[in-house]
Image (spheres, rainbow over the protein chains, first blue to last red):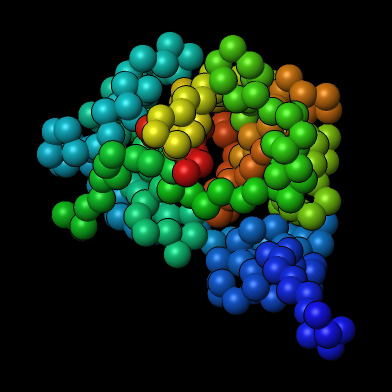
Length: 133
Length: 138
């Protein structure tokens, strides 16, 4: 074999930190949502309304997540009025405008107290939404 | 779903057997904090500023985690966590961190951004809804 015919191939998926940062930034706005900022940074609020505040009773029965209803009905630490979600009003929000669907539901009891649900699972069979009544 | 933010150190922790997410393994807790997570340097719960108030226990609440595998897909599950505020109102929080309470120094797994500050007044609740799973690895 002639020396000049020798060759070395290299294959690596390992990126330098600069390449990683560049690749991540190319993802667009979502990159800013994942902690790539100095410690102590105060992020702007990103939460936006998704569905207007309506009376729970005005929504079709079974439309809201049953687990949310049950959490309210069965929580013995909250006031008795709060355990009747049918008397509440509810609104849906998104934690970020890029969310595909609502991930925050806020129930408002007649006593003025709020009960927040933050949907963080990566799979969810259903996520209710509604328009203005 | 709310966007899951992975701490950079977490990937190393998985490859060095820090975490066992099965029900018989380690306890994963959810904690509410007020400071934005810095994924490059934060790696344990003490790096975060947790909220305070009646009804919130420092360290957070047990998510009753479990992990199963089927057909090459690992599924991490949890049971919804409900916080109910008591007499003393909470200071404002915004983020939810999942951490391994069994590991030394409570290693961080990931974080969720609620998108705005929130406080709980006496008798109000904040519920984490994990849906069918916390995360899957295919």
